[in-house]
Length: 259
Ligand code: ADP
Image 1 (cartoon, helix red, strand yellow):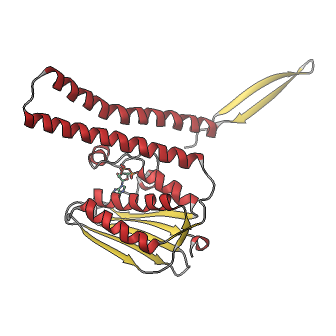
Image 2 (cartoon, protein in one colour; image 1 turned 45 degrees about the horizontal axis):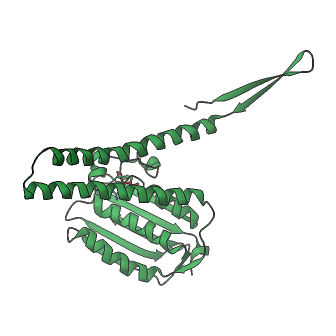
Image 3 (tube, protein in one colour; image 1 turned 30 degrees about the horizontal axis):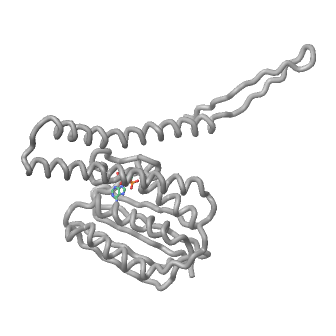
């Protein structure tokens, strides 16, 4: 169902006439509601780790801890602090991307070399828990902004690794489609994503399973960032997924972005 919001203004016009001005403010109200949701989400995401941190600090102030307990507390506090740091970093990245809606500059980006360094990072993150395959099927390079492209690629790979249970497989490839589009693809054998979630999955803070996603160390902003970067690079983010089998995330770059 579509709800329409109309703002009506009345102006006296001449001696016995009125001018009625009706304006469709549906989009305006939607934007305002989204802004309010966003602020509420950010506050919640920051307050949660802060509450945990303060709890630990209070305990440490009030009771004498053994060296072992103290180390455990410190490492838990480190985890919460790192989470807040990632969140703030992702928020800044997103704010910069949203402020800058123009197309990304045309710097040369060597995808083949990038794939080699992504592979090293992926293996470190997986720490031997997954089978990781990298396929470079074309020498084609890209025109774009290096940091952004790296951030988009590594976000998709780290999601695949974080959501795929031990023993699963992650396949990353760079290829050229028959229509001469550049395809960066990440396939995992993880839990998959139900089709009902797919249309909203790139929204800020949208999570399929809130607690699981937070436990895996996500900020809920990764795919929103990837989507913005894709748009700035004349690319589409395509997602296909089967629950229980896995997901494929593709970035499809227009021919004018290829070298
Ligand atoms: P998060 O930081 O929570 O991972 P993202 O924006 O990167 O945030 O992803 C949004 C949500 O999409 C995640 O919370 C998760 O539920 C789902 N998701 C993303 N990538 C995958 C994947 N490879 N497999 C299964 N679910 C995924």
